[in-house]
Amino acid sequence: MLNSIRGTLTYKSEDQVGVDCGGLEWAIDTTSTSISSLPQVGEEVLVYTHLHHTQDLMKLFGFSTFEERRLFLALKTVNGVGVSLARKILSGTTPSRFLRALDSEDLSVLERIPGLGKKTAQKIVLQLRGSLVDADDLEGVVSSQEKEVVDALVAMGFESKAAGKVVSSILRSPELYDLSSNEREKEILRRAIVAMS
Image (cartoon, rainbow, N blue to C red; front, side, top):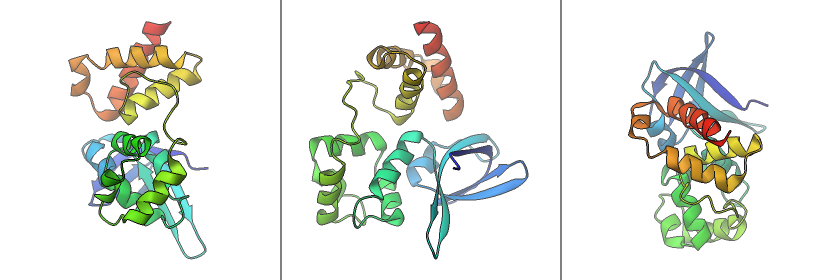
């Protein structure tokens, strides 16, 4: 299974990016949310991928965060939401805002997303509410990147709430925001491991 692609970002368009990986350039369909968070063309990038394959179509979708891909895969399981609408939904909001809307059953947030009607918004809430929002309170860890770092720490054996507190504390460091998205994630993880060891 193709999980992610790391390489040089070769171009960005409205809904697609190119990534050169060892001389092979991938054309990856993505969301405006992911495009805005990716680094500049020419820089190294990591894109989490999903290969959508049907009898008539093969498309590679990519996301700047693991969390956004997780939401994309969940959305496309909802009856009436295909890959195109799932991508539109995630282009119209951020993962954290989407999860908060699900958790509070706030249909108005979902209905404001272009291409998403009331009935489909209701289906999404009914099917996905509770299945995507974590039961553990991560105490302020809301962004998808923070969540990825916490998930990585939990996979290493650290306790979820403690990891959330440490990562939340590390994020107050202003120098982190001078780093690219990928560098920032690595640095947060490195500092968190040191702090919790």
